[in-house]
Image (cartoon, rainbow, N blue to C red):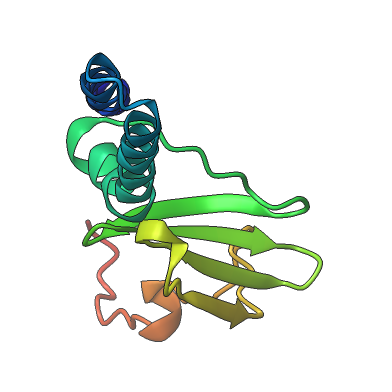
Length: 141
């Protein structure tokens, strides 16, 4: 919802600037000013507001999981979103960062992670670790 309000405000400002200049018979200046407002609004959204709106105000953001991978989880670290996917063909877990404006994004690859196949950890029961010896020979309970 906040995303739609943002874009409505940007378009209202652009149309208002265009109308102000057109009223004074400056069509060229009005067009240039409106385009500058739209360019500033787009770059501000793409490089700053998109993830802020999603995280703090319930905005909308779409991320596609690459073909052949399984999504395992996601988390926010600051204003950056980290997505964890599993690639069964390569047997790797991939942590991909989505930062503001998609600049300086990190990527961590874990090899041989097997997140979908639980590993068999040998467990010993208490009886196997400490054999109990009975010293009671009376036979009564």
